[in-house]
Length: 314
Ligand SMILES: [Mn+2]
Image (cartoon, rainbow, N blue to C red; front, top):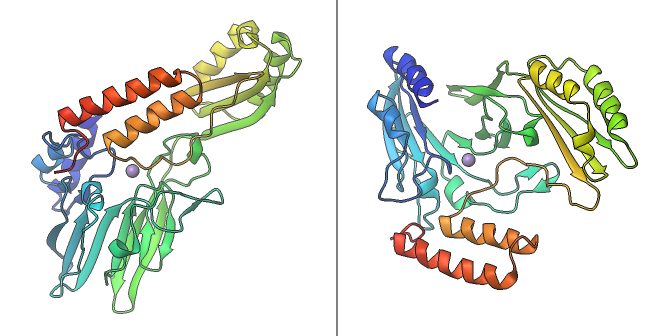
């Protein structure tokens, strides 16, 4: 995958097109002593800020002096961070990553805000946001451009694409340009109470026939299934569906178990320590880990992380 990314990066750079970006939560090195995979792109002439500081990059574009304020995920975590526009630039653009105040997903406000107004309130001509995968207006000059591909069924209703900005005396205009992606289809959920393997096979077949699934990424949820029902299904049908679809995923939840929560847009990532705490906490709550063991595991794990210097910010 990194080879494909580098080839496409080189295609842009070779044409003399300025190419800048920042690291998000996934691209930021987990240990400060290591480097980021994005450094490879920098070697072929792009520029990605992936450290823990705000970086200002002047770029001449179409006769205008543009200053980019690159605010990677690593800098957003700094409570003291200050981002200011360049007074000498014609156009000031901030590029950053995280969750803005008031961002609602499926009617729910996302809990954790890591891009407070303190970061966003500078007098920039435009603020380009990443992390939330939908094209979304936060303010007139502040948008999430959205992702160019869907990353999970939580994004089944998103329209992948990119954004084109036009700056003029009158301000900034933004246009979302959809890109064609593989179809992603979440088939209507099947309630399997009292079904036999043959019944379920029949309903799965009906659901599949109702849509054109060829080459698509498909999910079929089955809930409230009697024990071991999935094993009694017709294997030939499942093989055929797996062959026709890029991916066909049959997700069966048995009676008495709790359905896995739907994947929303990706959660915000904290430090390794916060993630480890959340990991242990979730398993203690689900009963997977006994409380006494979980406590000890958490304590030991945190001390190892501390010793490795992974969580502590200097
Ligand atoms: Mn992200």
